[in-house]
Image (cartoon, rainbow, N blue to C red; front, side, top):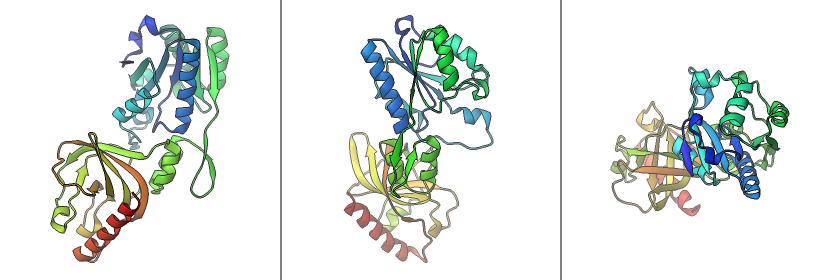
Length: 309
């Protein structure tokens, strides 16, 4: 697989293949169905398979005052998208110049012109071009005249823990995460919600009360404040973990942190990259009367996480 950051440099050897384009925020099961369809069509036709995405999300450029942290880091998104076996992964820098390209220009200059796609596979809600004027109907119509086939993959549906059947979208994943419903997030993503970042120094209170934690610096959307059970992964090692997301109100904290107590682990993790995968909600974030009450609750939390392993 080759990775490109400029569509102008797309190699002639990979022209004439199947193309999937999207922001792929979170790379949920709907995205996965689309990508699998694109991959399968490419293999059946024995042509290249190309995936194109953007960094950052266009909303960051168009609405800079509205903070929109990603569901996955760019590195995580690359890893997940690479797992679908594309011959080329095009990660375009999102600029105002690119966002000003009309839908017609995107099809003629990029899809037909540089990439020479013979097949485009997209989801039912796909939009493209300046002002999101392009849609699946336009894609079908223009594809007929430009010589590429269009396949629209229906929106994926899943059953949540409250027995509702819902259409999967990145917006839904964010809504569920904001409410701490990490099991339902996993259903929508097809894998656990995972935060990734370097282990950094924290307040170091955990070690003084018998529960040393690893603090990670995160540039992703966080789930609701609370205590969770999950898995910490560092390199090739993995550990069950009790994960805290929030402000540590017992100690008067004001800014949100992400920290994890790794069960049956001792050592120094500073500077290492850690993935924290969330698989269960344990409880709300609480302010305790004192350290002793907090320690008693942490003991219960850790035992609950251990039993859930």
